[in-house]
Length: 147
Image (cartoon, rainbow, N blue to C red):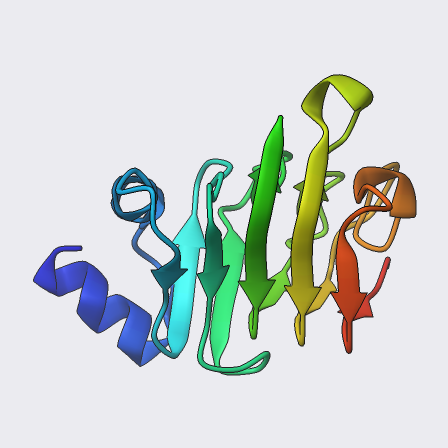
């Protein structure tokens, strides 16, 4: 991330897009740790091993205005990843806060969604719609809300 993007995340203004920087970190094939702050995403970010934040109200991801896709998504076949300690706040779009394995062709197994909050998405497939999270994803201590 650039110095300006880092400052934006820390200031929690989420005015600068960090999708490319986060996707670049994910491309290392390792789990990505995101410090406390607010992250603006203009496209779906697809973690391969996982994303871990500093806390469900400390590390926040927000889709850019008008983005109607998943904020975070994983497609398969994929096994073993984690999304932990994050907040995903929608912009009232009809998109999804998170999609893990949306069909049998994109089967995702043994992922863990832990201590995270997903809210602010409306319409079909909004956060909390269990058809968008495969049953082999372990959900623990999460708040999944549809508006």
